Amino acid sequence: MSGTTFGLLAAPLVSAAQLAEKMYRVTVIIPTSLPPGHPSYGFRRQLHDLGYVEGRNVIIDYRTADAQPDRLPELVAEAVRQKADVLVVGSTLGVVAAKSVTTTVPIVFVGVSDPVAQGLVANLAHPGGNVTGISMAIGEGFGGKWVELFKDALPKATHFAVLWNSMAPPRPTFVNEMHTAAQALKVRLDLVDVQNVTHFDGAFAAITASRAQGMIVTAAPLLSFSANGPRLIQFAANKRLPAVYPFRDFVEGGGLMAYGPSLTESFGRAAIYVDKLLKGAKPADLPVEQPTKFELVINLKTAKALGLTIPRSLLQRADQVIE
Image (cartoon, rainbow, N blue to C red; front, side):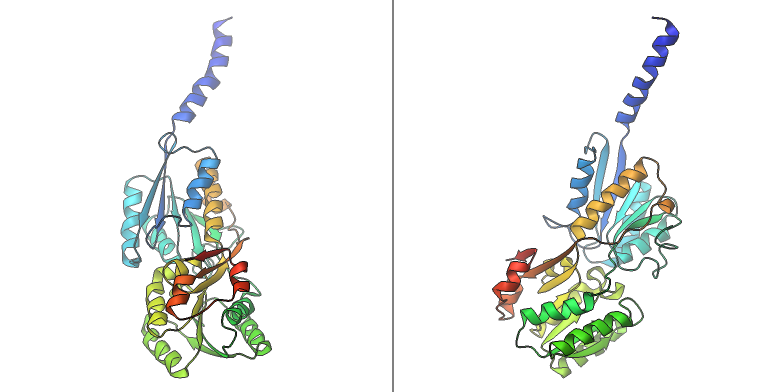
């Protein structure tokens, strides 16, 4: 075998060895705490399925803000200092913080309801910049679904308060869906608008004064778990007010019910994006995905504290029951 021939055969082997030795660093930033079974672990499982092995070709660094949004910028800055190859960020506030810290490190988001309206991407098909990910946008039909599920949980209830932000999604069409479902079910709805943090006290006072029998919390950055979740859950607990929320993190934090896009599935999809980015794709060229799987989660411990008995028919429909 000639030296030239040997060189041609050996070169690919050297390249493969070099590729195998490449160690990537991926930092996952969670706005809350990280209990066992947190949806973000779906990211780690999917990344493993894609051929990444921690300690061999990837370091997965989880960082949590413990429901303290003001810590998010520093968590991002620290990840950038440690030369993270990709940031995976699990909230709107987290992505806003990440985008303010770096315009070069790729950012994959999960848990953002409207990335275009938030100014995180130019558009869904062509995000532009260094940000892309999995939207948690709640589409048509969800307004009515929340009312229907809540009525199933509270068959005797005839009056719900709806906490929403008129300056952010859901749009009026979404609210119209809620009114249509409420009318069919003979339920009165009181819409309570919260446009900034100074409105919460007035909103809580209005809900209390209305004697609503349940509270529906809609999807909006201001009403997200990372922004004000503990405050919303504590209000409901103090007033012994059943509440339904858009995402499971509220239920894991002590809320009664949630129906919305699956965070576990979305974190798994985020791993596919990270794989593409580590292989050379650009965030600007990866379209933002919409959620494809939805889940109903019920907290029986909270139901017991409220003195509620959740109908067995609804429990059987739940994707998860927390006891």
